[in-house]
Each structure stands twice: as structure tokens, then as C-alpha cells.
Length: 105
Image (cartoon, rainbow, N blue to C red; front, side, top):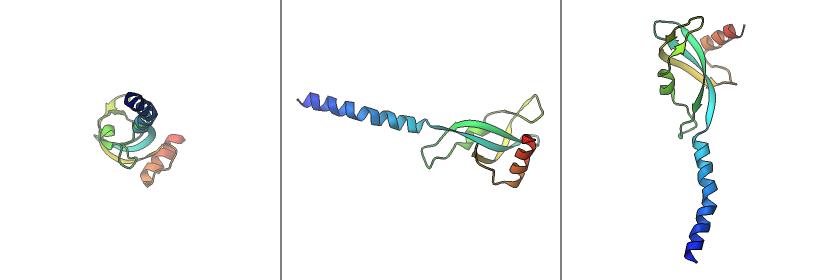
């Protein structure tokens, strides 16, 4: 009887464990305004996993990904991440908003 109770408990808790795993692996689409090594700025889009603390993204991941600069065929390294925002939201940084408008034209 104890074995059956343990088995039923395990079966009942399995969906909750998998739900937690999917929440942990949730990714969001973000756009980031980047300063590149050697000068220049770029806006790039990423699909990044959320960190467990406060639904934040890991900026260090972005710094380690080489990017294609606007109008260039060479990959360049990221010097600094100026700002990241959700893909459907506006940038707070005025220079980032201006650069995004230039891309949309």
C-alpha cells in the first residue's frame, strides 16, 4: 500500500516538475543597442533565455557573440552593450531610437 501511495505521489508531481523546467527554459526576443570594438554602433536581435532571478537576460552572453556591423561583411566584437529591450518595445536611449529609425527607413 505504501508503494502505491509513493507511486501515485510521484505521478501527481511529475507534471509540476516539467512545468518548472519549461519556465526555466523560457526564451525571449530582445533587441540590443551595441557599441562595437573599433567604433560604431549596431542594433541586433537575439533569442535569449531568462535568468531565474527577476526575469532578466544575461548581458555577458551578448558580449561574447561576434556581430555583423551594419553595411559590413566582417564580424566584429562587441565592446559594450548600451541597452537591451524586448523586441516589441521601444528603446529608452535616444541614440538607440534614432539608430532604429534609420534601420527602418
